[in-house]
Length: 369
Image (cartoon, rainbow, N blue to C red; front, side, top):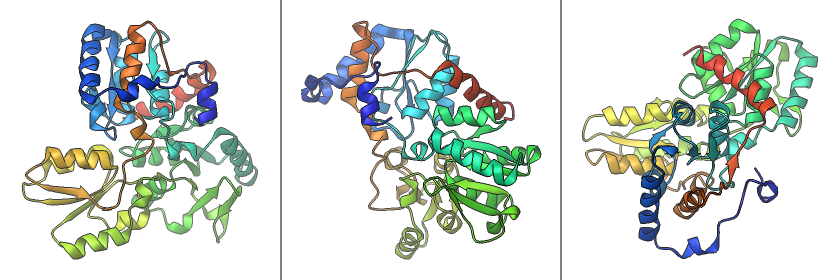
């Protein structure tokens, strides 16, 4: 959501100035009071990439799909204060009942990856692809996408995927159609396709800005169309980072997220979802060393949790995800105090027509777990 859209949205508001002058201790004490007062009516899911100042109050931590599912399962909660980004709160709203209000503490907490595929671009690209290849393409979308994109995929027979199940879902997709359109992260799509033995010449990138394929060969040989999108955090890890890390200490294990480029994943020792990264380091032997290619808030948290191991960012100049960092203690407290005063700010509401089609895409994935 753009700043203009945020200002125009009737359900959104700007943070009152007095929250910026409160001390961290004062805000933390007030949050504790409100959590206790609201009890089971309040559920706070927190994504792994959130700041510690917020994650300390989460009732559950996890990836976006897990948190949305936990929100749906928590039928006692009237309010879901989602500490993540916009598309995550949308998914929670899609899966919860009409009586549950999903709230994003700061509407500016978006996702650059999700924003790289808007519905107008997708529909134009789909018309072009259908004209060239007919009814031979099934769309898949990474869970890191807007509700509108999920609805588009659901309407056209496709499904959502996560970084954990992308291969399973891509294998399923090829039982349905000859070709796949993979939205919006080209790197996850490419890395997954490579694992399945799909050759580079069988992959083409669709540029939604130029509305053309980036491909030199015969397009009829292509099996997977990769949307030209990427995560701004994971794109900042490079093969050079890996080389420098190993030159400094050959004993270091390099583990990265599959949203990194193919070259980085290929050069790393391990690659997998956020859950995979967490579990691998949890289970690693004491004294081992880990250079981690994912979001900095999580890397720092892993570092603090594993004093018996050496954990650090693969890129020494990496910054935390800027949009994830929008959810801070002042916005979080403001959200809770507003609820205490009977006011709902920054509610996320997905239109019923969009929700019905988006849930089809989600269910096609969940049915194959």
